[in-house]
Image (tube, rainbow, N blue to C red):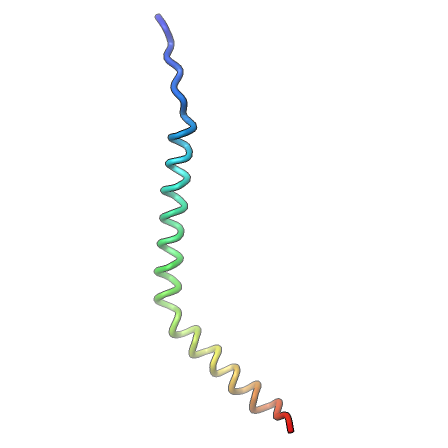
Length: 56
């Protein structure tokens, strides 16, 4: 019997691409859902800093 050796580099690369794509989609969804909340908090902190550090 002959053993057929298959090139598995392509399979590993495809798995890597799929995994990277899923992580990217998850990050975009998380950023989109929390974006407004983060923006509000940053603006609030900015207002406090400007209020405390008045420059004449």
